[in-house]
Length: 475
Ligand code: ADP
Ligand code: ZN
Ligand code: MG
Image 1 (cartoon, helix red, strand yellow):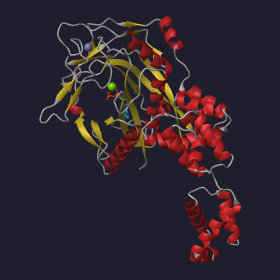
Image 2 (image 1 turned 60 degrees about the vertical axis):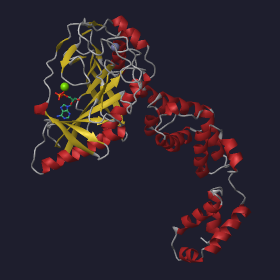
Image 3 (image 1 turned 90 degrees about the horizontal axis):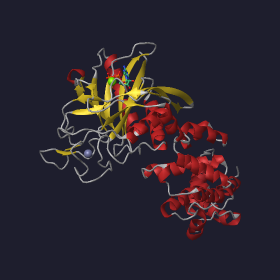
Image 4 (image 1 turned 180 degrees about the vertical axis):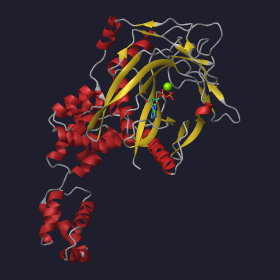
């Protein structure tokens, strides 16, 4: 039986307002526990919440950026449950009347662009945090996060693969960062994602029973957790079993999802309209003002990069944030060709950034760095291979390519007689390989070239090395 996976995501984004949703406490991350709290956010009786207008504005801004309808009238609701990190015994959220509905974002996977529908975006307050590490047999509660404005974006079950899911999260993260409503930091938890997933036989219309996976704090984990979960569900169905609707936790160390609670244990939240807050009314003038604050979004940047002569694949990767797209354009304006800049950026530069767990907007290299490096490769001063070393050194020191090449003596050797000496030496040291090559083992050419590059510390001009080798080996 062929199965198809169906995925819907719920993304929680902490809004980057200075103060909390219903009180004046700071939302800054990393403070001493319980130092950013007041009577309102620790849930003292008799206090009243006051809405943070900026937070509402940020949700509207997000809604506009993802093609939602902005509700002229919405309201808050109480979601009731007991948990130590929720001192009031309820979370102020939104239920039947959210601020935004019916939007979509576009994602591109393997060159195919598709729309993922958004059911709704609503505003709520975050809970505190229970801390178990270092607490011995006890648990600690830190309420600094309690009351931080949190936006929940719910997608339609339009996603069909783990890769699409990761791409969707990337896109939404790019958008909220672009419009300045959330810093998108998945490790610190300012952007969190729950994934709902089911499988069904290809061709079947009805959705299968879903499970919900929590606790994935990176794009990679979203993809891995879904891959695991889809395999798990298909295996159960193939063995004649049935899927239990439940919430599962992703364990990134074990690489598996584990049951957390079943539907029977699910809470009845007893939602009802929040009596302490007035409804929210949004007029067109306000919407228009917020719209004016939205600058270029990833999709527009992508189009402008395609106009710069980039293939869609490259444009897609480089447009995901403003800094990468700016870095690209500025480097091209200095004279480097679009394709060489793009190859450098989405190849070696992105690899270095990934290793350092950094984004393009934290990249210490500017357009002059990249252009300088590319010019040295293009005019033959250094080989592409040495270029990688120079890039790493530029990244570490902030120095320009030219001075690194001079200081380290990395200039490419293109003098034939100099390279010839090394070629002769290597060939005379490897008589057996030479014999095998002459007997037809063509791939040994790579072995010889590698030895020569090693002997010249990567500085020999590869083109000349190859020419000389072919000449000497009589090929
Ligand atoms: P719940 O009642 O469990 O909250 P919802 O219908 O509100 O479920 O949907 C929550 C999320 O799960 C949404 O993102 C939605 O797209 C997704 N979803 C709903 N049903 C399925 C399904 N059968 N398979 C996969 N995802 C689903
Ligand atoms: Zn407070
Ligand atoms: Mg629901």
